[in-house]
Amino acid sequence: MKTIIIDYGLGNINSITGALKKLKVKYLFSRNPNDIKKSSKIILPGVGSFENGMKNLEKFKLIDVLNDQVLKKKKPILGICLGAQLFCKSSEENNTNTKGL
Image (cartoon, rainbow, N blue to C red; front, side):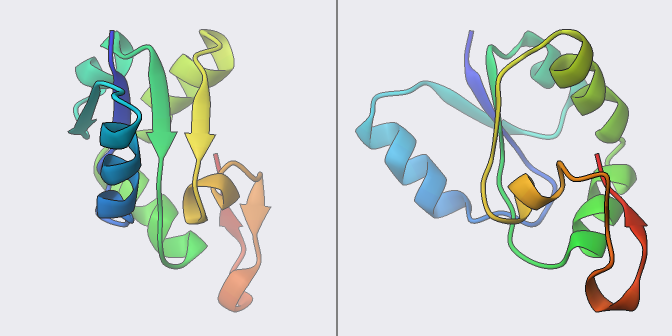
């Protein structure tokens, strides 16, 4: 099984892939729900606003599969920067009330 880096259009991918290569960790960069289900660990990177992050996760239909794999199946997940913030229930960033994961 591989570690999956979630591709939702808002990530600091070069830094993460560089670190994983140095650590000799096998990884896949994908937004395919089946790849997420087959992975052993999940990395949710991110750069940008909370609202855009949630919109992109919704656009690529990743919210349900992430919640299922992490909350129900207890798959380990690492959120980096915005990715970690998206774990919150909600955000009021930029005067919005955006629901999180």
